[in-house]
Image 1 (tube, rainbow, N blue to C red):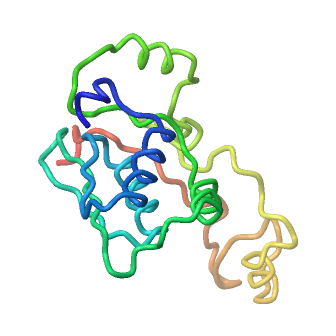
Image 2 (cartoon, rainbow, N blue to C red):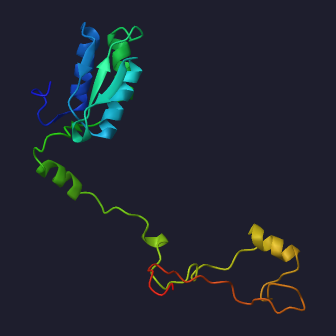
Image 3 (spheres, rainbow, N blue to C red):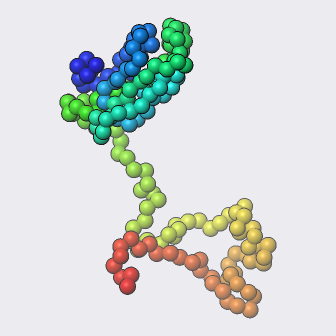
Length: 180
């Protein structure tokens, strides 16, 4: 099998191999090495046909092995196609072979940058919530404070006590310098 799929195998190749395995009399099917997500997908296919599956090997050379059981689904064209169509996926590259990197690099180059946490991160010295708007009248916390006698523009605390007029602020400290 490794000789047949030197670079990797597509989902159609996996389907064909499982189809041949279900039609044939072999008790085990060993597929080429692939990454964790793709092995998981192969295990899902195996589960759909009631095949026992496990991964063997170490590191980049981990590969799935499928075993026929007494409960394994008997091959039927319609049942096979129905189950496989639900589980269709993409090309499964070999993980244990160096091979061509240009294909993977060109696929990555079209993607946008990752992240997505830029708006939620603060720099050293920033005040958390400095640009946050005042709480609206529908806010539950504000409603509770108003029930206890607070109104906008007045200090928090007892009437004879001045309390605090400004909200408590927190200045971000990302480095350890100056912490004592």
